[in-house]
Every structure is written in structure tokens, then in C-alpha cells.
Length: 429
Ligand SMILES: [Mn+2]
Image 1 (cartoon, rainbow, N blue to C red):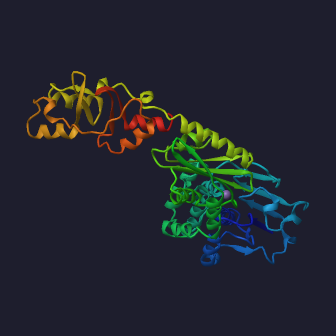
Image 2: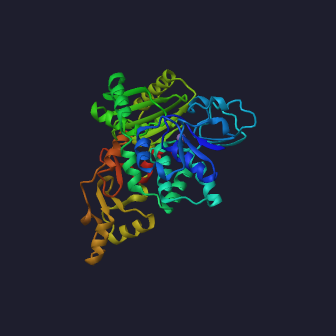
Image 3: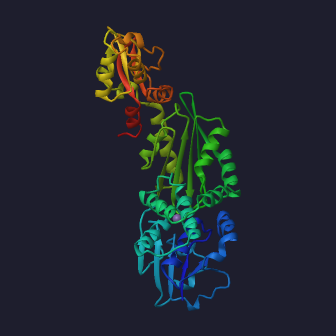
């Protein structure tokens, strides 16, 4: 007998991978561990009959000669399979995305560092053109979304995104997916949240309040980013970091910050993750929680104490400037040539305001292209100083309809920040 099984406290990735296993290996029976996550339990209470699954309880392992293990690499995480450990002639096939701490030695191993195990099985199903139902597609998508925070965790790869598209093309139902994902906020989240409230450390940096919570969680717990966001709001903080540590010596670090408070991206990038000033995440492996916490505190201090300044990243404004006595037609030509949506209008050294593309269009309609630019200046536009920090600039860019901030020093143009240049800076490109 060939069986497919996965870890106790099965999450959606584990369940999806088991079901995909029964598709790829016709004749294999899915063996459901006794304990499953509550969202999975709710899902199964409706869908169980649709899948070829039998409960672990009451299963006699004597007849098993082929074991397919999905979404774990550790005998201890399986539901009472120890008797198979030394069975002579037992074939073991693994499908998994956990790279460290493997205790299950397999004959055929499909182990790759992707965001979800189900991705590996789906790629194989796509290759073999293995048929599956829309209901199964929905479960597979739940697997991808559960393990990758709906593709937002930095552990997600482009392969998860490709398989998401593949599943949507094959009938996955997003309404069902979202209804089961929203249900996955359960008692374990309440417990984690109350731990966060009780155990957080506070850092104050130049008036900015930052909370850091290091909390052990069961692996596969999703919605952690929402918990960090809620925690930040609940405590009225400027920024918050959650370090969620699972039994697989892996920590998920999630940061959230108000736009102008601090740059979360800098911190998580230094840990090998990704993000931007307001939000980011990283996965850190093989380090203990205390060491990671210390490391993050230092990174936060660095990020908080050295915000980059506008003058470090501003562009030369030369090609964005028109003189107040030039015609609107000339301004229009410069905009077309430089592909900008507005220009800075200056009289000698003095900054008067912007002339936006829309003003040129208006003048063209009214046949007034020959008048001087001075007559069409929009004076009260958001500006920034060279000594201001880039977080302030990012917040102020929001108010700019033209997507540009003139950088002014004593009323003179010192440079310019465009939305594009600010974005490149945020992603450190
Ligand atoms: Mn997984």
C-alpha cells in the first residue's frame, strides 16, 4: 500500500500537498494526521468526502510499502509513523520546502526552497497534465496563500505566483479561498496577540516609539502581518516588529511602520528579506531568538538614527526648469522632450511654482500658447528642503499631484525629487 501523509497540526499547505499527492500517485491513499489547524478542520468538515483521505486513527501500517511525505522532513512531526523508520524495503518519496534539519531519508527527494510545498507538486502536475477539479484547485490555492501570506511574505517566490495563475485558470474559487483564510484568525491568534501585548519591548528613538515582540508560534500560523499591524495601532506606536519563532528554528520577522516614522525596509533587507519604508518581512534561519532580537534592535537603531537626507538622493533640476518669460509652447516642448508632467518655473534664481502639463493643454485649447509661462504658474505646491530626511519627503510626495517635489534652499532651486527617484531609493536600486 502506498500512502501520502504530512505533519501534525496540518495547515493548508500540508493538506493541499497531500491531496495533490493522491492526484500525482494514483492509488495512493492520503492519511490525515489526527491534529489539524482549525481553518483546515473547518474546510474538511465541508470538503472531506471530495478527497481520497483516510484518518490516521485506525490505520494499520503493516501493509505500507511506499510512503510519500509532504511538507515536512522530520519523523517527529509525522503522526505516529515511527514503526516505518527502519522498515526494510520501504520506499520513501519526499515533497517538501524545509531545507534544514532533515531526518527523513528518502529514495526520491523533491526538496526546493520555495514558499509552499504545494508549488512543487503543482509544477509536476502541470508538466504531466494531471487532471484536477476546481474544488481541488481551490484547496491548492489555499495552500499557497496560507504559507506565503497571500504572496506577501518574503519567502514567496515567482513560482508561487505562476502557480496561482495556473490555479485561477483552472477554476480555483477566490470567494471560497478568502472565506477560509479569514476564518484562520482563531484562538491561537488571540493567544499570540495577548503575548505580544504582555511581552513587548519598547524602544524610543528620537521621539519615535517602536515595539518589538519576540513570540514563539506554531509553524504554519498565518495572518501574522495583520497581528503586527493591529498591535501597532492598538498600542499607538510609530512602528512595530514581530519576531515569530517556530519549532523549525526559523524566525519570521515582520515590520510595520507609519510612513514618516522609520524605514522598515532597511532593517529587513539587512536580514535578507525585503520591503519598503512602511512594511517588510524576512525569514531568518538557524539562529536563536535572543540573538535575532539583539540584531534587529541594532538594525533599528541604525535605521532610526541615520535617515538618508534629500540632498543625498535629489536629482539635478536643470532639465526641469523653465524661465518665467519663456512661452507656454516652449514649456510644452520641454515636457514632451523630457517626458515630465510638470516643470519648475523660475525668475532669475527665485522659484515661482510649477507649470503642469494640464495648464499647457488648457492654453493650447484657448490658443494662448504664446503667452509667457509666468501667467500660468501654480504657486502653492509642496516643496522640500535639502536637509530634510527622505521619510518626510515620501510623506509629502503624497500631496504632490505632479509627482515631483522641488528641493528649495532659501527660495532657490537646489534640486528636484521625483516620485520615480524616491521609489528607486526606497528599494535601494
Ligand atoms: Mn509548508
